[in-house]
Length: 448
Image (cartoon, rainbow, N blue to C red; front, side, top):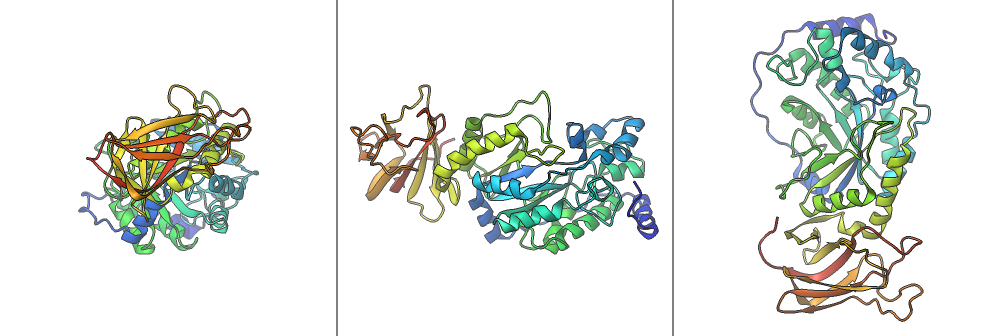
């Protein structure tokens, strides 16, 4: 694994690895995300996370199998396993095109996970993509594909480097008093900064950086120093992992989720979320003002796994119909009534979107349903419609008038709507229907 690293580089690395450990944690660092960029981030609504490293060859958890591993395992993991990694089908344009179709606005690639393996040909270490059978930069074509198709570019980067800690002689861990993370380990901090400098100076403007690690103040400051307009998510804002908060969080925030049970590709024993579950999660998060960062774990070949692609395509159909209720919105003061959630246009606060789930009984096409929204009131200019349909035609049912109607009652704003659009061949549709209410007033206290 020594290919491509010079004697000088090795000497510098030795100095870094043997540098003294910091005794104290630096003071708290200021939050510096640009306010205008933060507002833009809130408009995007949905990002695709991509967890991928050479240990996808085994279908294991990414990086964490190194924690508590035997010396023999670590030796084979570091020196043998990368010799198998050759993603000959890697085509990030395919990834980006699917993401764009599904309504994603940004994509975040694991440039380096905790294992320390760099997905670009770094000058800082030979533990990188350069020393695999593939041998080519993974990051550059990803960035180029994103920019070509108008997708925002995001980098995941972990300053917690298990390979580096192993070279220093530490037991690999992520908890404990003797855990030498970046604010307690000057050598590791300098090493991680040198890699961030490569990523943030050699690939042009980067829109998002997700810093995954403990006490990342120095790294966050360095990102802003190198690229002031880059948005730092984890490290600077709330990023709940594998959970949705019970209540809205002030300012920009982002929930990240696996599509199955594992971040990286898991070839067996995997259980994926249904498309409907994915859509309902997205609605709940957006109603509370956050972004959803949902994961895709490529196969070692570079292909998107069959099961994952199917979920993204179900999401794509729903987003193709309803995307205006997800992008460029803010939370209402009323988050939900019963099972119906609301969002509000960021540019027109009098425009509200109501997400109506199917309920216990499938909503048949051509059937009218009525709802009363206690927290909404009609104005003189109020108009309502069901997203995706013209409210004039129900295919094969010319006797049905699907016009959307409303009236203000003592109980609240009463709406009457028909599910008219045919989206599946069997006329069924398991996912929420979205009603656009333009020119309404939101009343009452905020709900949970």
